[in-house]
Image 1 (cartoon, rainbow, N blue to C red):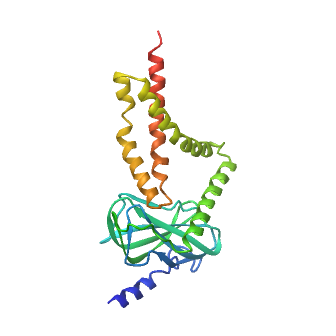
Image 2: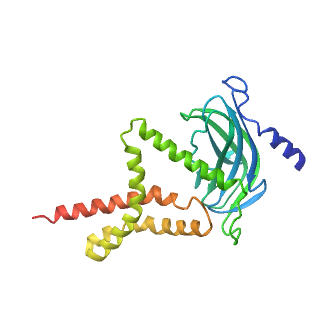
Image 3: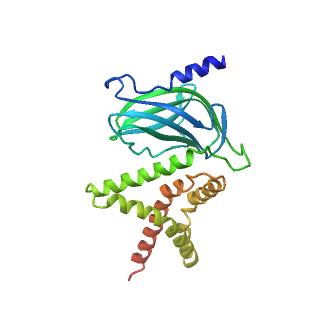
Length: 257
């Protein structure tokens, strides 16, 4: 039975050979996964897929997790999917979950550089995320780190290219603000707590409802060796920083005679 399943999985590795586009215009197949089929990961660790592709246009790749035919979206993160150049090459796709879950199927999606879905393939694949599944640090396969570094470099290049294409530096400034607002939030949180009293102090403590568990999760992911540990902070703490900044401005404005 296992052999039949593996044969069917192998057949599902061929993508993009049919559909609305010309035959063989673009194709992709899974070369390897880390961990392999049947593996177990700690919560917050990523499942990596090494793809070999060919295409006559730039392509993006994403992977989604399913269980019993239903997509499992809650608590999931995936790769930024920068456009890989046309021609033949290798691409990296990954997915991770922030809570315990088991999957029995992966769906690999192929997009063009404008995020138009071109095709997808269904791959039977058993993978599970558990809390405390492994105490020792994870050992990644040799191909994961260089492909992950290359993908991050491609993402940075894509952002720089968007800046040069006439967005007036908006996105670049947004990324810089998000990065600097993280230490800015912690500094401002401590300063306002020490200086303010009564209702203003209570108002300044409101962000802690979200930032305390976010910080705890980030430290947990860092200790577990996840290379995605800062992402949650990057997408949430800027809002906490803006809240405290607005509170500071409001207090100063209301304190005027």
